[in-house]
Image (cartoon, rainbow, N blue to C red; front, side, top):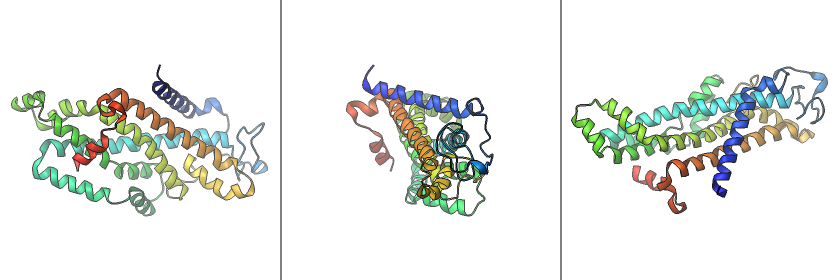
Length: 285
């Protein structure tokens, strides 16, 4: 097995272990992530509390597991939203073409000129913090790149014989898109969606760190960092370090895994180590 494949396999194994631990959190801890024990505040890692406690005596290990549920759920759910939007928009734009395609792409250009994090902050500041709102905000502000890549793929696919034959047979446009175009774009969609999960986790952590993400009573890796920023100067380094380490490890594992998927699913794009996506994005513009 090559060094590259080894890194990919290890990344998938890390993600699998993380998923098992956060989904099966009750199997790894018997404590309540929201239980307050004022007699055990700011206890360092040790016996009884593997990773220590926070300023309210809550067990860091337990909150790390249950917080991982929220962070991973946000990552997967928001990417599902952005993928549906991006694939639909890009497929319609690429297939219909002509002036409709030009108008739709100019809209994408305008949206990409705005920093996505700034849009998230503005929207979240006007809404009540909740898990659903965070998922929708991240999903509705991160679909543009997906749409451009799908459009580029569709532009080349729609001139293929199987698409022309389906069109000549009178197949409705929506069936051509769903049955013929989208399945052939699936490698690109899968790779982009995998990358998007890592970005979504970072976005959730950023919003929660700024107090505009997951509500404080519901643990997530992002809002665990909030509690740590005020306590680290008091010597409680373990409060922000462990959730921060989990975010870094998860995002790195997702990045390496998506890179491996790209090599497996899109071998022509990475031939001789050259990624074709920047050229595809430039062409899409």
